[in-house]
Structures are given as structure tokens and as C-alpha cells.
Image (cartoon, rainbow, N blue to C red; front, side):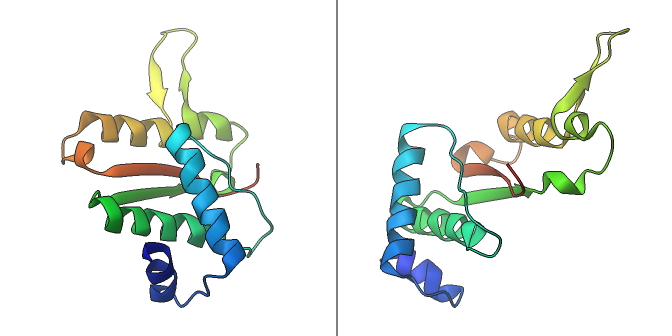
Length: 126
């Protein structure tokens, strides 16, 4: 019921196949810390993740936070460093990237992050 309501609130049709994929993703995330949702452009991958997060929040009252990063938006020869961070070979100083800075902020729990479900979504090519 939560999935169908989340889909309806976004004006999406919750087909049997779509609901099965959402349930499959929920099962995978229950067993591991990460998952890959694969499909063509416009297939509804991002909406599936949004709806699942909303549905889980309606079930267990744990608010979901989605952090969506498009790796292709980081245009530089060293885009991986911009995304994940880098270690300076001379000074051995670590500089956070976008993803590591976000994870560090969540772990710091300065705004009650521990009370919410956090999903870091890399929305781009695999």
C-alpha cells in the first residue's frame, strides 16, 4: 500500500512489474549496504528509489534522505578525486570529495542524522 501511495503521489502507474522491482530492491537493501538499479534512460529508476524511500518511511516512521549525485556533472580530468577525495602525495593531507564530505556530514550526526535513513545515489552511467 505504501508503494502504491508513493507512486500515486508522483502521478506514476504502479504496475505489477514495477512493484516487483521495488520489493526486490527493498529485499536487497535489507541484506546489504548497497545496490545497483540498472535500466535505460527514462525507465523510472530514480522514481523507484524515491517511492521506495517514501514507502519505507510510511511503514517504520524513519524519514528517508536521498542524496543524488550525478558523477557526470563533475567535469574535470580528475573527476574521481572530485567525487571521492584525494590524498596529497607530499603532505599526506586528505581532501574530501563530494561523496566523502556528504558521508562525513551524515556520520557527524550534528542535525540528528542518525534518526533518519540515508541513501547516497549515484545517478549516472555505471
